[in-house]
Length: 272
Image (cartoon, rainbow, N blue to C red; front, side, top):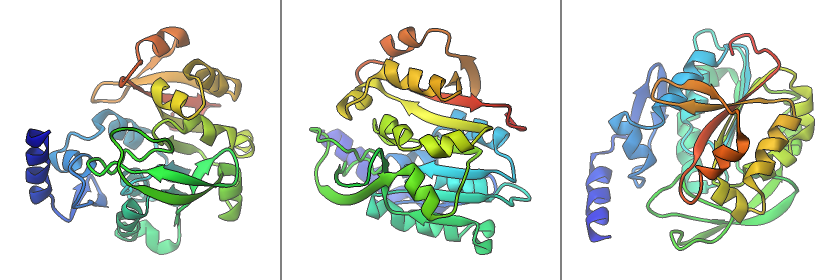
């Protein structure tokens, strides 16, 4: 622990205020050695970034759930010729400060194409406790854990209600990274997903986190398939897709702290 604290302090000292990822500008949280540190070193989610940049289309509506400091929202907004919309959802108030700055620093935001929502996406309208990780600002959860210290009360609503509030009827690209609450998000998005005939979904798959939020890993995969998504695992630093041929085998090898990054493809998106 003392060694980790020293390493994190050293990383914090090296963090710039903002970085460029391709044409995108991303503001960093100076108190986050994990995500902001990895972004600074160029090692953060390389496969996911590569896949997103290769598949996101300039006319797509993008819903970024668990946006953190806004990396993927910035990538969308900086897409050449962007004429779509971005809705970035982030309930963690500290991260949202940098998310707002990221949004404002990317040119397409000036057209009013980007919106920020401070609610948590869930399966009902309610008030929740967000448990915070002081060493990793992207690891805030809706359940207590020994790693987490500090709490924040947040408003939650269904993704259907949130999107309705912002006049978003359908989405062609959705990213969900909510530390185990993914099934709650999907359960609250039935209307949006039904209206989104052609859609790409990027989602973290972490059975332990899902179980702590009252869901089951296998049931989550089945839920996505029932909604019409063909499921793939996103692998390697180049973002290669491999078909999920055995959901049960995927669950078995992602136990404990292990997780996978999945892509669901519904319909035939022009850029998928």
